[in-house]
Amino acid sequence: MSSRFHIKRLCIIGVGLIGGSLARALRETGCVETIIGSGRNRAHLQRAQVLGVIDEYELDMAKAVRNADLVVVAVPLGAMPACFAVLKNSIGDNTVITDVGSAKQSVIDAMQTAFGELPKNFVPGHPIAGTEKSGVDAAFAELFSQRRVILTPHAASDSRAVKLVRQMWEHCGAQVLEMEAKHHDEVLAATSHLPHMLAYALVDTLARLQDRREIFAYAAGGFRDFTRIASSDPQMWHDICLANRESLAQMLGVYITDLQRLQQAIETNDSEYLKTTFTRAKTARDQFSESS
Amino acid sequence: MSSRFHIKRLCIIGVGLIGGSLARALRETGCVETIIGSGRNRAHLQRAQVLGVIDEYELDMAKAVRNADLVVVAVPLGAMPACFAVLKNSIGDNTVITDVGSAKQSVIDAMQTAFGELPKNFVPGHPIAGTEKSGVDAAFAELFSQRRVILTPHAASDSRAVKLVRQMWEHCGAQVLEMEAKHHDEVLAATSHLPHMLAYALVDTLARLQDRREIFAYAAGGFRDFTRIASSDPQMWHDICLANRESLAQMLGVYITDLQRLQQAIETNDSEYLKTTFTRAKTARDQFSESS
Image (cartoon, rainbow over all chains, first blue to last red):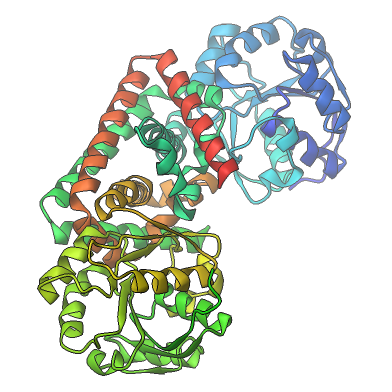
């Protein structure tokens, strides 16, 4: 980690759980002079200022990014194209841009569309961190501590820009890795997007049963843990589904096939299949527990 | 809760997480004079004695239940038929029998087969509590505190026996309810058995992907919570699947249909369906959080 990381003016567009936690974490490092927040909702930005998450706010995004050294776009994926269109006409030549979107190829495509080419100062990123909560009130400085952040620089990404974004996350306590955007999207479809779909679908399936009140009354700790992520922001996950449509639909297909096979094993008393599958899963999960 | 609950001799067959936690909880109440453990594994029983969970142990189940006021069968569902066969030839006329199996109709059927009729002192039960851990080392006295226990007495169950079992659980801090065995099995298929299948299947699906090491390396907190129950005992869940085959296969069918519909919505950019489903699920999950 370089000690020379210093930002005079940081602009965070979208001061929610992720943007707000990033502001809090960077403020604690003392490496950032001024944090300016921007977004569509004045009340949210005022709240962020009251909480001390940002120093000032500016609803006009074009004004907000003026003279910024670094702009972090932390809006939902669906709001990025409009955001990039504003940046195209207002961003300074030396301002580095990064984002925190949970799918990366769609962000790169949106940037390409907005700018006509991929700006050399644009470094797509994704902190693998979050909670089922959302909004700046849920933000906390330690969110990224010991978490992984994946950067997916494009061919023309400037190495100075990549270094700055990397340093920013490292100063938040994160471990930074780089990979291809497409590969990122496949990996995250499996480990994050698919589980969210399964949790949403389970709660929704149960909620639509006739005796839903009784059903939930008898749910216990396992159910609580299993479905916690179904409390996540619906708009955000709507956007992620559409942004990572191909990889996610493919993973869902693989999973559904496996689940149908499991259902068949239960129906046919296939003792061996059940034991083998559960044991293999437990072994993998226990290994994951130990290593993470 | 009656203050007259008192047990001279309690026999717990299967001193694992549930049986051991029950022993610990009852010992703290001071309402039980002697707790005798039984089971197939001497080392496990010795361990339970060393930990102070049981007072003594007896590998010979017929001897263990002799003179017991109350026998709690806490072995995996698949081991119950053999266990009941021994009880048939050794249990005293006044000894109350209960169990802790996660599926109830299969336990009742096994008892009917072993005894030729349902004993009046038999009260099937199911504490809705547990962790992903197993074994007596994981047992703790508070496991049942503020949890629900479902009793599914049969038509010939003696009211004195039902009262004794109810008091036992209430003294562990649990809330006791009664319902039909078949209804219990349907409710638990939805809230417990189905989520366990989904978690096992997810971890297994990912574990069988080519880049499994990398996949798990990028899994974060949501994944950890979501898959915790996949660390549960495979043998126990194998037994539950087969014991509650019909209800579980049916719930899996409903879920798979819903998941296929979700996959289709993702593939076809069905924005409205995604938003509606996720929002409905979040609302239900948030309500569940508040009420539990």
